[in-house]
Amino acid sequence: NLEYQGAFLYGEITANYDVRNHLFEDIKLRYDDIYKGHTLELGNYKYMDDGAREWDISFKKDKGYIITGSKNYVIKENVPLGSRVELLYLGIIIDIQNATNGVVEFKNDEIKEDRNYQLKIYTPDGKILIKDISTTSNYNQQNKGEVEYDINIREDHESKRNKIDSKVYYGLTDHLTLGMGYLREPELINDEYEYLDKGRLEAVYSNYIYSLPYTFRVGGDKVFNEFEYKVNEKNTKDDYSYDFLGQIDIKKVRLRLEHESKGEFYEDKYKTKFYVRYTPIKALDLEYEREEATKRDGIYGIDYKEKINKYSIEYSKAYKDLLLTGEYEYHTEDKGKYSFNTYYTGLRTATLKLENTWKNDGKDYEVAFSIFSNGNRLFDYNLEARYTEQEKDKFTFRFSTNYNNWFDYEMFVDKKGNQEHKFGIDHITDLRNPTAKIKNMDSSPLKVITFVDKNDNDIYDEGEELIKNVEVQIGEQKINTNENGEAMFYGVPNYVTYDLEPKIKKPNFLLGNNKVQVQGKNTATIVAHIPVKPMLTLTGFINVEDILELNSIDKMRLYEELLVTVKDTNGKVIDRAIPDEQGIFEISGLLPKKYLIEVVYMGIDHQIDGINDEIVKLTYVDVRHVS
Image 1 (tube, one colour):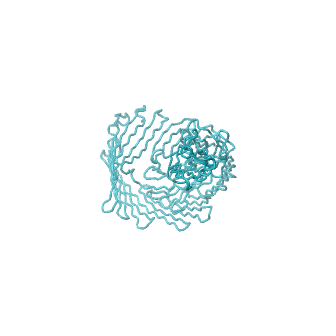
Image 2 (image 1 turned 135 degrees about the horizontal axis):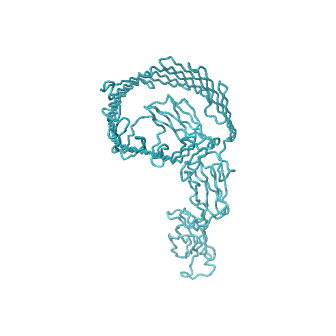
Image 3 (image 1 turned 45 degrees about the vertical axis):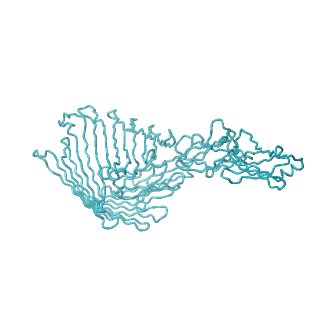
């Protein structure tokens, strides 16, 4: 399996290739935070092993999680290729996964609504990144003027058509959010694929009443096309629904009521859910949910009702390196379920996990004990022993090691004698310079260009001379510019700002604006121009012959009693000089800018006013004299 990550069209592209089956897996081009926290992703995904593929483009806000089914939370996050990610709850590790094609996904029973989690990301170059994930349900509410987009266009291989699913939420005020959705998908109707167009409107209002937060949401959707199914004689004109949600938090109690009415296209006529959650102490949740559905056309041709009740108790307690979680759940259809889990991270580089689960009112028991390493890139292992009433005991051991960020070995064995061994090279290479030492896949090369800034604007202009032998440093890398004034750095991590530290080795040259900052943004090559400014010498001549008739000795004595001062435009003294016997003075080490010239007579034999604040503009092309 080959994985690739790099810069392409100012974004980040990831891809992997299955060498054995000669198939490309998923290929994705991603633009993170392209607009107010939104991510743009273009992908080409494997549909089947026969080579069929589907195109997809999405533009949505990255929340760090997705919701599947009925309030099932899955934490999903983009990370650098080769990363190992820990999922933390209450500061304790509850799961560990390795990234697959730049994505890590956690499906864990400990992930619940209205909880805070952390992802601890160990990147291949040794960095540790922390990502906070909050599963708070805010119903896509926006502040005034804010907009959230969720747009997806996906190719459907079966119908050879595209599916469009788009939602937009706009904050009309800080309390009122308006939402609009449009769904266009191919549907098999009477043995032919037809497009169904469905629209949705909704409004979400939230505020406080006597310091108690509450939320209301009303919405409805309808299919615009009209098709009649020959099998059941249903018509899409009856495909519509209206829904309502109300929620209020009264101190430690949350109450939520949901109601939905559907058109005759559906079997469900009405569906009502009532939910209450009571949190008497921190991390202890008592929940009750009742769902009642009114169905159309029962056995006797009349409507009938179905009722489902669900009770649950959830508790979590963290003490130092120990986390205990317990849950009891009773469902009308699934009967009782119990679980008690223990997580311990006090072994520095290892985590212990003990899971106990009873299903079907305690008749089906399952226990799992596992040990996995955490925070260790060189030596990585995962040992698991599992026992179930149905499958009896089951043992698996997974071990992997990475030597010197180069050689990778992985082994898997189980009780049945199955073994799997993997050998591979885990090394990052920049194809533009294979010999460069690269530690991060998410990086870009940097080209530094040093130039003579003739017009003193700190910007490279066409035609300005390039200069060699300027030393530039980033981190531990030091490179001198070549004959063309260029130096190349490789492996500069993206989205990290660096201060270039240039040092010039040429006499009579100064650095201009040496606080040059660069930041990798997935461009093919970052280019940074560093202005270099040759020092100028101001030459002046003091002319006294037009106002005084002096012999040569008196002239020499007069020049010795004159003081020339050069100041910047703010009046700060730059340097001083005394003219020679011919009245000529020089002041070196100046840059091309405006200066103030002051000439003062310090003697007592003559009455000379001198010069006060004469403005001089120095450039690289003009020779200026002051008389």
